[in-house]
Image (cartoon, rainbow, N blue to C red; front, side, top):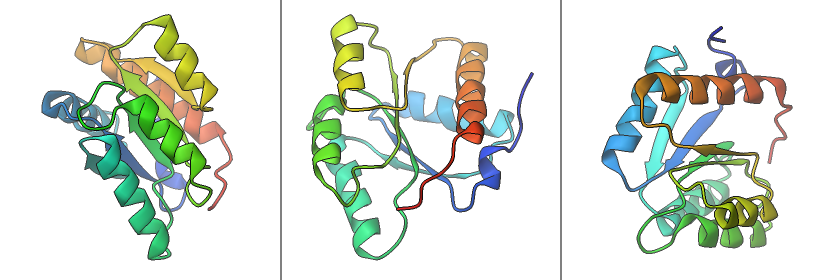
Length: 149
């Protein structure tokens, strides 16, 4: 079963995809389109860029993107370091983060959960698996209460 457009019903919900891989970003946006999830999607290619973006949005009085999809393996600042910085900044610390990475290492999973991630999804290689993973995220988020910043 595909749950269509449930995230969209939450006002101003935007996805921030933090991933340096162009092909993975394209898979994510195509999967959203196929699932008819037409929320805004913005991108940062590493943790530094993502933190700058979140802090800039907060400073301008705009709501931070409420859903971050975060890869762990990136140049300059990887996902775990990003989470550490994010959670230590009280202005943006409550931003929900879902890990979307190729890493299935138990240490990465454990460390990510130490930073209170909302979920940990191992990037599927096949299109149908990506659709299922993002549809599950869609259903999960539709059930969550969105806490405004």
